[in-house]
Image 1 (spheres, one colour):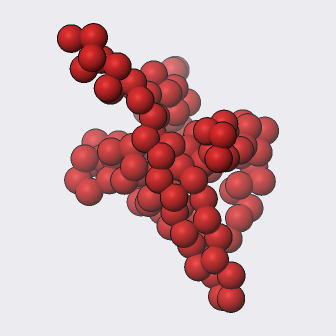
Image 2: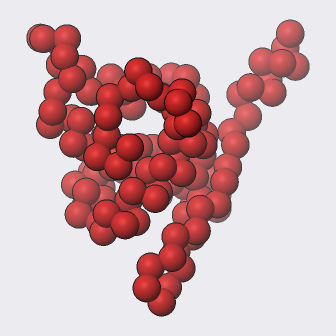
Image 3: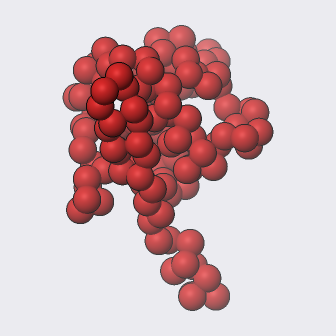
Length: 121
């Protein structure tokens, strides 16, 4: 059982290439642990009402990018402080990057039907 547990603890990485006009940008994204995934979703729910908080929902795509994009060393490239700046990126970049992150962490392609709708997905 330990070998199976170790297998599922390994991070998975993927490169995503996004072409814009005359330049191609490459991002490296990582998978998330269940704990990281739950931490990502937690701010979406307003603790007072139990409903999705529209302000947090608007930031979800940027939070997903912040949680998934890493450098070659596997360390996060962005901190929570970068989320407002990510929200100002060109939506042609963020929508493609969010879709790739969703696929990579397993919430795209019908698996995310019960998740809150984000701006790009």
